[in-house]
Length: 364
Length: 223
Image 1 (cartoon, rainbow over the protein chains, first blue to last red):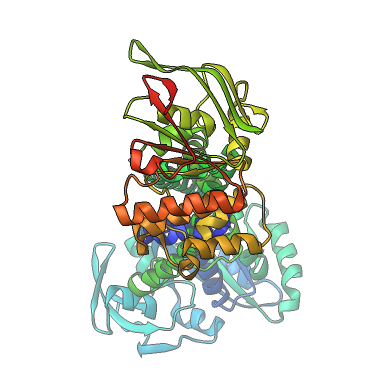
Image 2 (cartoon, helix red, strand yellow):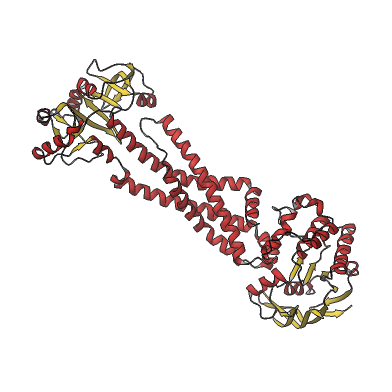
């Protein structure tokens, strides 16, 4: 019976129910979108690293595992790597930040292409001039670029010579030598990707190189890819914590306001229930159930809206951001929202439960 | 046997800095199965008497017993229990829950008192008698005032309370509907032996009762 009353109350004020649910859902969407972007971008980075086709990577001393890195490694090390037993191919990579999380990557085209089985060009082809750039299809879509278009970065206009299928480490690539010259870092690289004659030799090669290059982080690609996790990014974890707190506050405020208004609006009805013999627990139970139901509907709205944010991201900024749908966060976000909602209803519900029956019945 | 027993009942309100003596030593005995009308003008104290008997407000002093249970020392929880089990209310403004159907408005009173069994044959007969059997799945706003008041009567007696308290039950109704509601109250009283205490300012309505008492300036007088 109480559930029927709760359901009818929600149905009786459809706009209030809808707006409250959407507002509660926004908190859920905030959490799911942020966690999804974190996971999505790391997953995308891992996929693109996998697309290089290498077996191991040698990075500059002191560089972060999942960071972009900079042109800080001496290129001379490349010859040492190439001379190692079982090394079939080693290619240097230069990375230069162009602001925020964007970067431009310098490659030795032939080597890089050979390592990963070549580029699949959607349009155009490899660099043919010093100011040529190749970009992936997502970047082209986001920036509305075509072969022959010009792209301005690093204070220079680059002509797009080719658009390749994404999944090849970077979205924007130029010749390594050009990058080194522009960044005033001749002879400097960021990392070396290495392909072996047989992947089974990976650990043996790493062990051998670590003896000679103890300060250089050297990872097998599988191991590197496993590092692309939110747990390895304390800043992202802290940011998720902030957003979760905001979502709790959001849920609290929305429910507080919605239920406080509902309690005022239903003063007379609460009086009727009390006249019929309903105790504080009965009244409290009605409002708590109503809140739980609102939180459930809100969570479902939030989950649906997180698909909306994913669509927006993949449609308008597919190269800058990737949002994954992280199913494991559905119950977490819903429970967090529920906690905020229950906190929000406590005061209005206690106010209703303590309301004097006679005063409530006289309320117009 | 008296189902309502009131001795020297007093109720004083604080209104601003002034004490208002709403009831000044009321004495009353109501027999089980009696239909009593309390008649008085606005401000005479009849509504205060109604609220005390219904457990909506505590008395200041005196003795009030319903079905042998003293109301004088009841706390809020005790008064809630009294409303749940011993008293049925019919208000002037019907006071039905607008979001529920007629059936659910009646059922919620049963739910509050912890009863889950379906309506028994006797109550189904009452529903027929009240003329609301065909309208159980409608919402209150789809019913006329007279019909809504008949639903309120059904809700008030569904838990078989010791007393049915009706506060100006015809105050919002036209003559035809007033007569119908009062007729039904009298009929229920005679047929089921339900004790009814009706508060009214209207002598014509009071005429439907077995006995009438007058309330004036917080005191009761035999009519």
